[in-house]
Image 1 (cartoon, rainbow, N blue to C red):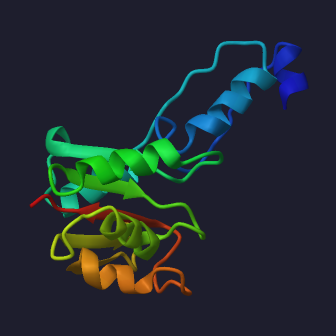
Image 2 (cartoon, rainbow, N blue to C red; image 1 turned 30 degrees about the vertical axis):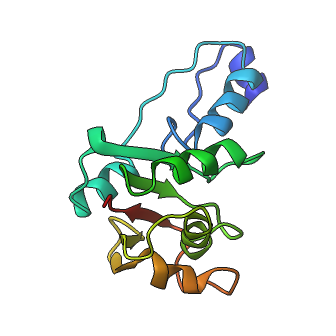
Length: 159
């Protein structure tokens, strides 16, 4: 692909996910592979759909993606800092940092166990589902085989 683009041909790299969130690492690889301008045409993000389904205004929300490689310490610290004060929208990292694991981490940092939590799965698919629970109950799924899809968004409502 990169060689053909370098030779003057046009190409399209199609990727799943939002290029402004989880997809930015892959997008960077494409940009480095081809020595030509890369135009991004984003679609509707699962985060936009999740915010809509959860009735969560983006301007009152702290968004964090954990769906990436590398150190997540700063991202988890942002979630801990804003839990209860702002709505949270989280893209979990399959399969080692799923919604229950994030909930447990927030509770360990002092978040209230009664904060409403929603796990929005497989958004826009025919089998889309929303599980409504609390942060405390959701944390019960930490460290175990998760009942949630790898195509999940976690929403935690502010107090």
